[in-house]
Amino acid sequence: MIVSMRPKATQAEIDHVCERIREFGYQVHSIQGEERVVIGVIGVGDVTACLESLEAIPCVESALRISAPYKFVSKEFKREATRIPVNGLEVGGEDFVVMAGPCSVENEKQIMETAVAVAEAGARILRGGAFKPRTSPYDFQGLEVEGLKLLDQARRRTGLAVITEIMSERDVDLVAEYADILQVGARNMQNFALLKSLGKCRRPVLLKRGMSSTVKELLMSAEYITAHGNPNIILCERGIRTFETATRNTCDIAAVPVLNELTHLPVILDPSHAAGKRSLVPALCRAAVAVGANGLLVEVHPCPEKAISDGAQSLTLEQFRAMMKDLKPYVGLWKESRAEELAAAG
Ligand code: PEP
Ligand code: MN
Image (cartoon, rainbow, N blue to C red; front, side, top):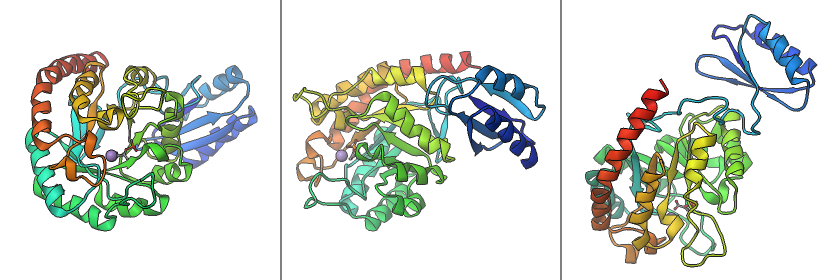
């Protein structure tokens, strides 16, 4: 159950409601939202009796039964799409938002050249890892703070917002100082300590699906962040591991409409890690538009053969321009149906 308090409810009233809920055998988890306190009711108890009792308390605005284990991120809790403000634009709103840039921030020239080119081609957000999760401890681990500073410079130069990966709870404040969106990588989707600390952060979070995680597990991880106070989450499908070896991962394209049925959070696709091969990226981008994703996260590098990481799946600047141009008519159709959807939702 989710219980929404009236906007001006006092602490004594909130405590009273929590006490009533506990009497029915439940645990409570309350969140201070922008306008009101919302109480998550967890556990096993007498639902009908509890609902009846809560509805009779004047400071309770509504009490809703939610069957999904992920409460706050479920469509049952909130039907309207969540729109996430990022530097003057919105992810999950009327625009299809493209985030693009290199896998890793390597040096000033590389990130500036990429930022200028992707901005000109129509991307709105610059990606680039400063802290890199690498399979081998001997591989490049990222420029860390120096990389964050270079992203900040690129933002000033181009006006693009910046997304970069956060790997440890220890670095949340540091990365949040420089980035507009904090990316949780596939390997950290169930790093619960990190998810909890991102709950306390004021920046939006892009949560990537773990490579062997189910859609439900992805939503439970998003629930962690929301339950700890941060409702601004963008979900990202980036391919999962299967028996197939023709691609680096298997792009679970169906996960996008599945998520759109289950959650109000925006969903984007990362075709680069899904495919592992640049020639496949444009087709997967078109697929993302067609299945109703809210945007893309694409790897682009000025000289992929010299890239320190993920060169094989990175588009060149020219290929990115061409991909964006080819995508335009599809995005046009996407916008029309999106506008209708948003209007119908009121
Ligand atoms: C990345 O975006 O460069 C990355 C490491 O992605 P993932 O976490 O999806 O592997
Ligand atoms: Mn990468």
